Image (cartoon, rainbow over all chains, first blue to last red):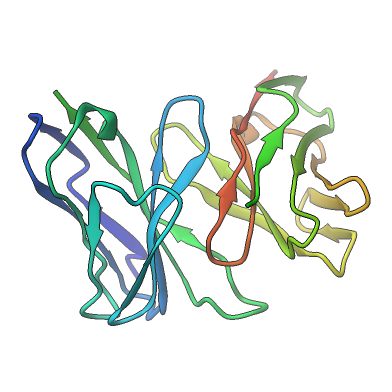
Length: 114
Length: 109
């Protein structure tokens, strides 16, 4: 199993550009989520999904869109990049079941918005 | 909502010592607590979790203690090794995790 994979590893954008961060998992997990991590802070939840076709907002959803058309993939879209979105982005997945809820994190995408 | 805080931004220990990392949370209704380890340039890695119906849980060289009365969580690492050097986060919640700001553990030989 590859676990949770994220692409790209690094990305530089100009203000106003759009892009999609890719996330995929091969563990057949129902639950997937996106977090951002800023220096000196813990991870903050952006959006999450409890299964294909179902998404919901987390703590900091503004400026981001998600969709979940398959169990495996959960892309994060930046609509119009802003410098405040400079951060490291992590995707995570889990079974979402009581008693077995270990969340597996991807390696992260480091995004810089100029 | 929930807020999570850690008591020390940095903890320095000698190899072989026991390490204790603390965390406080705000919501007394919180039910699920997790500790993660994050090495430089990597995603968080699950260490151990505990549910609110327990006050102690042990893993390999790690113990998590939960004190619901004072809303306090701690991670104990026995016989700390250089490979334990990392940032440790506590997180609260079942699927929508709320993370603390992290404690950097520095282990010197």
